[in-house]
Amino acid sequence: MKKYLLALCLVAISIHAKPLSVVFEHNPPFQMINDSGFGYGPVYDFAQALVKQADLSAQFTPKPWARIIEKDAHLPNVLILSISKTPQRSPHFIWLTSVYTGQQYVWKLRGGIDPEGKPVQVAIERDSHKMKSIDAYFKPENVLKVLNSTQALNALIKGRVHRFVGTKFAVSGKLNSLGYSLDMLEQLEIFYEGEYASQGLYLALTPGTDPETLYALQHALKQPEIMTLQMDLLRVFDSQ
Image 1 (cartoon, rainbow, N blue to C red):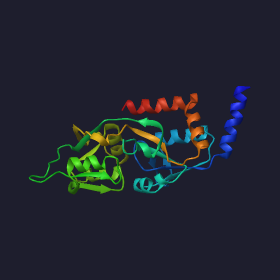
Image 2: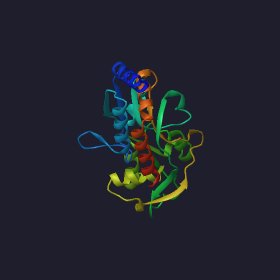
Image 3: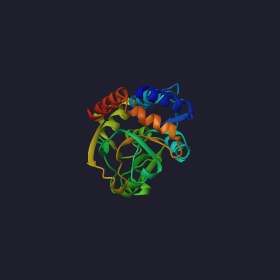
Image 4: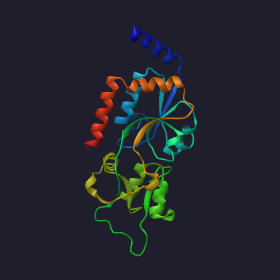
């Protein structure tokens, strides 16, 4: 009887919940956007399974990260995929669940020669959570800001800059998406983010999201099928 009543309650919640907007950037290897403009990848697939389990109406829309942070992050009923949780961002989102954690490193081209008598330059995605820590480490005048993290890594490969900062798994995935292997880069020192350090990548909801939507997603995360998918997701990332 209790299970029956709970099922009825969840159905009522899904009926009254407002449509959910799910936004994501092209961020290999977590989620990607194909040539037709559709999303794919492990985090994307997990989010789709989660929304389906929650029985919510949702639209998945790929967007540039700057657009997500500057506009979508301030709208209600928005789910953001693979957003870094930092002390500065923590109060401004509803942190649904973690999908990845990893150590940040500084990278350079293997065999690459740094400019003599000049500072090295680094590329970074606009509105990245690492922006302030990278500005402090490399100095703002030595930081090239680009549309996304894959473009930032490509700037290193093409010789436009001398450094890139990222986790080993993320760097490997982005290189693979560009047709390269990790062997072409040299891992340098650990990059300490200080007060801006990320606690990992999360699925996060924006403030003002319907309580019904939040409850439905939180309930879905407790279901055995979703728990298994999440454990598999984390296991795949941790094994890389």
